[in-house]
Image 1 (cartoon, rainbow, N blue to C red):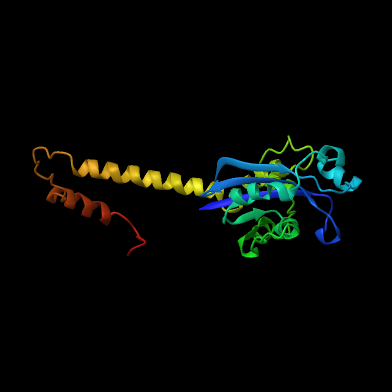
Image 2 (cartoon, helix red, strand yellow; image 1 turned 180 degrees about the vertical axis):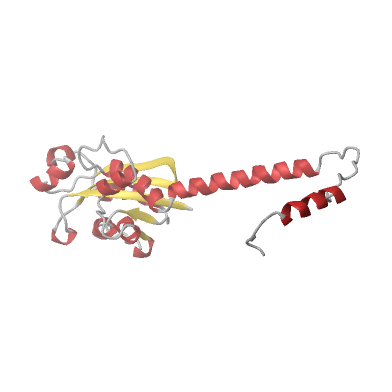
Length: 229
């Protein structure tokens, strides 16, 4: 199963008030395993960068001024994501900005049925716990020491690891190990059954002899007030 984990950086919190997407990072996964294929792009938002937003991701208006417009390279992103499910942390936010950009250039928005929200998954698995990406990385022992500021591709790569854990990643590994053990046991059993038979031996007698029975009766008669009496 092919899935795309993605993250965006923006000029603010609401595309309806003029905020724009300035960065997107995507990580391809097949059967919960990153394939190594990624997509990353910066976009010129054609507007200023509020100081609060720049403090989060470090992308200034000057840095973005020579980057392509979303409309000019949107086809690259759409080709990469194809029709795969799209996974994001607090996915409604990222879907909102992605679809707002697509609407501005008269492209079909991404269907919301493709959305997988890792916040919703984490809330079910860890009710009452902190659900930020940083908190989940800490919970699952995922190294984020190189994450100084938010970055779309870096955050998508971290989220891909978190997503695998939320889907039972370590348990999957244990199940595979258990299956391998079963296979080994079955192979050993087959090997024993297929081994050539040696000369047959007469079974050893195992019934007590009359002398052993007599000694046993004598021993039992010497027990006073037995529990089974």
